[in-house]
View 1 (tube, rainbow, N blue to C red):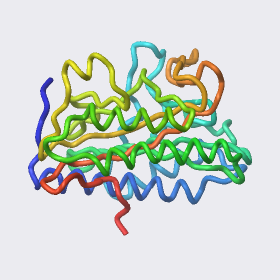
View 2 (view 1 turned 45 degrees about the vertical axis):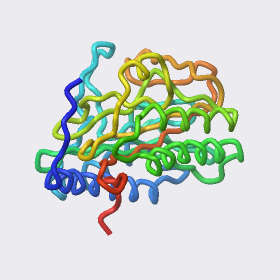
View 3 (view 1 turned 60 degrees about the vertical axis):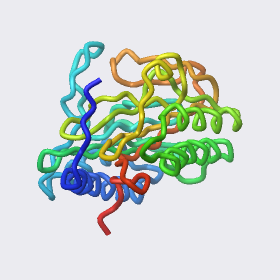
View 4 (view 1 turned 90 degrees about the vertical axis):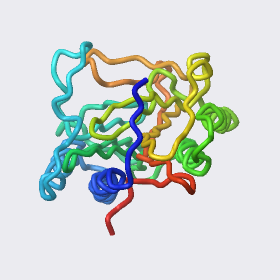
Length: 261
């Protein structure tokens, strides 16, 4: 792995990009109500990014499994959609839905990436629990990340938290390093497997990670729809997704994707 450690100056640049992402996600949460389309949310995200001179990260990304580049600036995944849901004026949000929105930008050469799952109107207790537990997994990572800690210790605690709640961590998709590119080394799983134990990540000052637990209400199995992008749960139960970009610093870690105000 070619892991890059970032300087204090670079971390500040990443924080500025992260603030743009956080501001957009905050506005989208205010917007997310029954009757709104994910296409409308996508349009707003592009307008907000452009207004501060930031480029969106996802729009135009190519995949060998898809016939066309990703068409949206946000990933908008509803209910049983795990990640990479395509925003569209045809996808109208309904009361009781949960919507996972992933968004990223590049500003002055540095990237920010974050995701949040939001309730639409009144959601069931089970959906609220799923969101709360998934957010708790992210909080565990933020609380425990510090120089000298092995990532497997954190990932094990994250997976245990989901299992205790009766949920399953998605294993087909993981977090990642981030810096001047959206996806950098290392891969950052939210569970422990042989690969992680063999090549564990020792957290060091200057390491910047996009930590993004994805948790399913049922089993961990997922599949990709025919569009080549949208990932859904195989059992059709709901999924939630939370993400922050974090920097490992001397005192522990700092969240870089926080609102500017």
